[in-house]
Length: 161
Image (cartoon, rainbow, N blue to C red; front, side, top):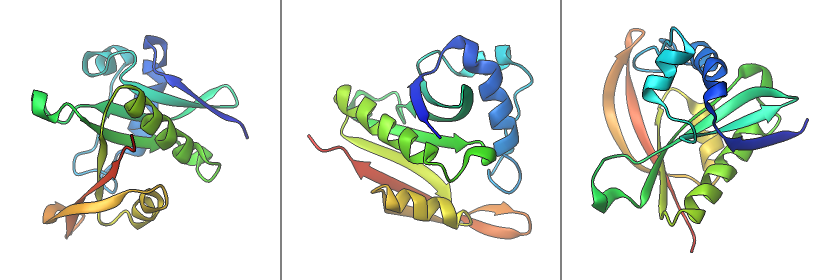
């Protein structure tokens, strides 16, 4: 299956809201994420703030690109959040998205990619490691979810100049 990427557009917001609503629940996020509409999604995301993956003419995933803080001294870092529709996992969409985020960051003079992942998401951690990310820190028992404590793992990948 062919996976292509491009920067997000306002016309993607309904599909992105729906995708997020299906991805982030009590098992996958410290706080379930739910968007009631494309308009609500647009209040928190601007066109071009995400890279979307298209699989067979359908939006199948995204990676968000944001600066972790508003500090100028932190402007060299891009914080990522990635999601791929479960129907399209295993076809390379996640890797294509992370590669696109890396290339975008490099083109924009960034130095580091970072992301956070729950310690219970072992398949995501293994995937990120295969894509060159390393653990840079761990907040031990940061969340209490579904009757157990869960660590918040910080991962990073440096951008080669």
